[in-house]
Amino acid sequence: MSYSVLLAPPAERQLRSFPSVIQKRLVKRIKALQNDPRSPGVKKLAGKDDLYRIREGDYRIIYMIRNTDLVILILKIGDRKEVYR
Image 1 (tube, rainbow, N blue to C red):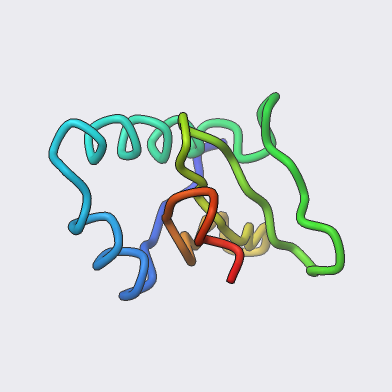
Image 2: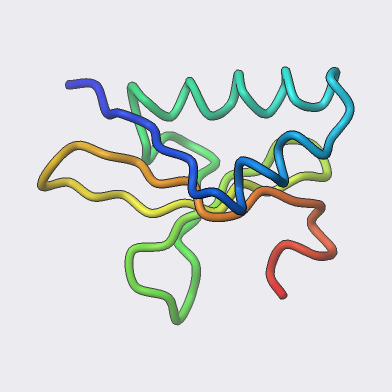
């Protein structure tokens, strides 16, 4: 069962702001979520309903899983120091 991945407009802008090498790493990680959005290394964010995060080096990808329509919505992508603000 494969999920579709959608990027929220702010996440798309954040992704484009990174150097191409970082973009490729992040896109690879996002594509891996399609097969298993709750893979090892994924953490559920405390105090937030249905929000998860996955690490890629010093970067974090914050996303929501909508199981009813098999969609992963990427909400934020950023440096670990700034993404939770």
